Image (cartoon, rainbow, N blue to C red; front, side, top):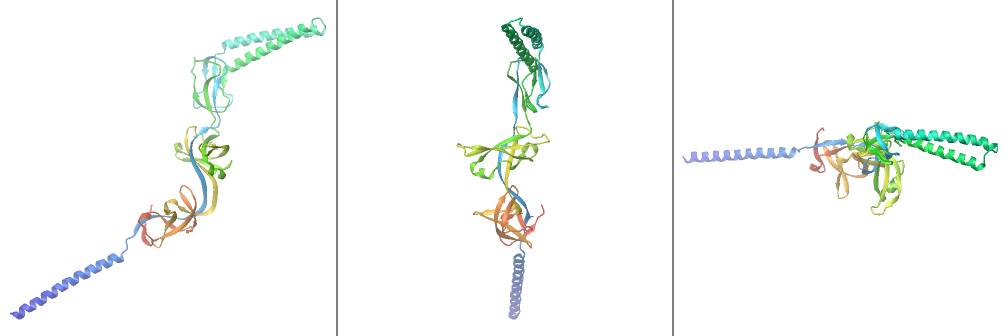
Amino acid sequence: MKKIWRMTLILALLGAIGVSAGCSKRGNAKNKGAKDEKVAVPVEVAVVTAGDIAAYFTGTATIGAEEETGVVAKVGGVVKEILVEEGRYVKEGDVLARLDDEKIRVQLAQSRASLDKLHSVYERNVNLHDRNLISTEVFQQSKYDWEQAKAAYELAELDYKYTSIRTPIAGVVTERLIKVGNMVLPNQSVFRVAGLNPLIAVLHVPERQLGKLRVGQPAAMSIDAMGSESVPGRIARISPVIDPATGTVKVTIEARDPSGRLRPGMFARIQIIYDVHANAVKAPKDAIITEDRENAVFVVRDSMAYRLSIETGFINTTHVEVLAGLKAGDTVVTTGKGSLKDSTKVQIVAR
């Protein structure tokens, strides 16, 4: 009996040891598999390219017209006819409106009759004076009367001409200030006309940037109202005076838009290109990591991400010039950098 009990105890101990060993083996195998399998971090990448990259000064401004004027009535009168409306393109000298000219036409006819009469008197006196039949004083008075009548006629003719209100510049009618039947006074503004070619934008540039700018430099206007479409321009003029209150200088940019979509009052973001590096190595801005004034990127090679320090140059809205540390064709991480350390396994995710 004692022998049977001893055998049972031994078998129970062996079974317990076997179970423990089996659990230990499975646990070790599981831990070993977890250690061997490195979890790949999903990232998005981009390829480093080569090409031209520009340095530029940026600013914002409201588009304005280089030529803009108020059209005034040069004589008074009642508005008889309006020939243009706001938004209409007009050429220099086009008639925009007409005033009632009935009274001025009568005055012009009177001046013409008086001029013709005095001219006849003067011509008759020329003949009489040559024959010494009238005095020089009478002759000179008749000449003076004729010249005075001529000046009065020309003035009446000018007033009649001014009953047609004309624009002094070519452009678009931006505002109509009168209606048919209105009484207008001499020198009263009746229209506003703005020239649309060229249009201008004024930037106030810090004086430290002044040495980088010159007249004729190219610029680009990105217009919000045109879906951020870029319109080419150039520096038209740079003020010779620096504003002592702000330390800035006035720089005028001009742009020509044959499509006619650019309008005064539009908001523009302006870039003035002042230098270009050709065949530069360019990395996407999203790939750059800046820490403690040091720039770095993660380069992907054989599904591993390696952190590399780089030296940068020009920067634009999308790319950074890399002076050292990368070459064209390298693959760099653009999204997922925050989850990476040097020599991290990665999985490239297509955009």
